[in-house]
Picture 1 (spheres, rainbow, N blue to C red):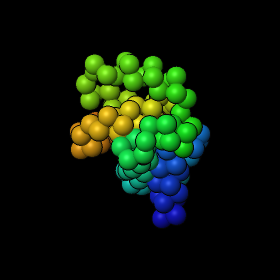
Picture 2 (cartoon, helix red, strand yellow):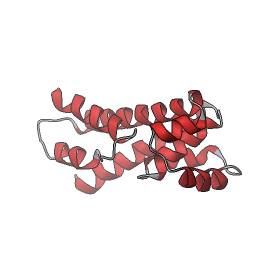
Picture 3 (tube, rainbow, N blue to C red):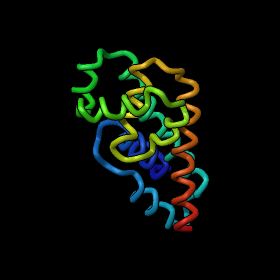
Picture 4 (cartoon, helix red, strand yellow):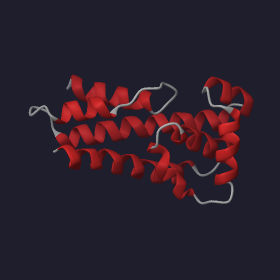
Length: 139
């Protein structure tokens, strides 16, 4: 039970401002026979998705300059991604699982007040796909 909570917490933190990855712990836990692979998959996906929703919320509620500073997002990186995403659809929220740019994508959609429900749906599908791929690759 503790392992499921730890992967949830690690996945959540990895998807916010902390520069850590949840994948090594996820893969390690997959190797433990006593743990349910399905519960691990959902714990990691839900934790990671809630972390991205937190970043989305920061973008939604905080002034842009304050939020960029709080999240340690480089303003030039935000500008480049913002320019790229401005004419593109919600489908890019699927790619929030990507390191570095994933947080900026979540933040961008929050700043621009795009539908939280649509963002959450596509973003969670991407995170589920990533953890499912890891599950398939290692077990």
